[in-house]
Image (cartoon, helix red, strand yellow):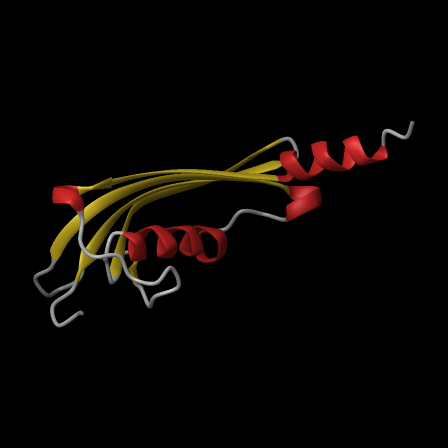
Length: 121
């Protein structure tokens, strides 16, 4: 019996993993489509008043050899977009993030706030 299928499954499972916790404040808001438009604020908060809908903490790990490098602007924004849309947000403020690597794994840890800017549906 060949062990290749088992090896392929193990490598696939070890190549990337994402765990995300979403804390919606006051139950959040009406969910939007998972690929809705989100504005990201990385270095500063918006200059207009906004409503805070929730907080997100996400950890993304990728195997450098089998999945590439975990990056904020790629995998991070995709994960945050899906979660923010799920609680009705239209913008995300990146509170903090850390990108590290250990052996063949790259890790991205993100802390963010989901908000709704004025005039959004």
